[in-house]
Length: 106
Image (cartoon, rainbow, N blue to C red):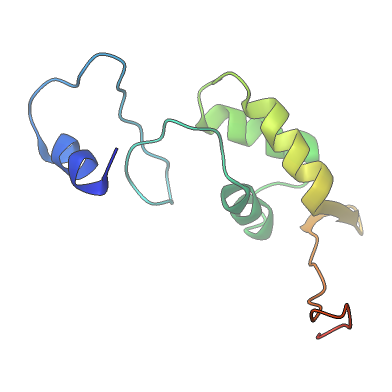
């Protein structure tokens, strides 16, 4: 599906083809959402201080995705890899930059 096709659907008054559903997310880019949440979306939720712990993170994302199958598991997997609790707050884990030899750059 290309960008022009999606834009035409958004601007059209015609009914959507079978299997298509247009949804938007508050505060994020408007458009068609048909996949699972991306790592960047979860990062914005954590960095924006919108959630205080992993449980609340999962609940908020599930609510945004209206109970879509697989969302909970995807968010848990991202949170396990990319977040940690510091001073009783959920924070995004920053990765160290390394050069090709493995030496720290930051």
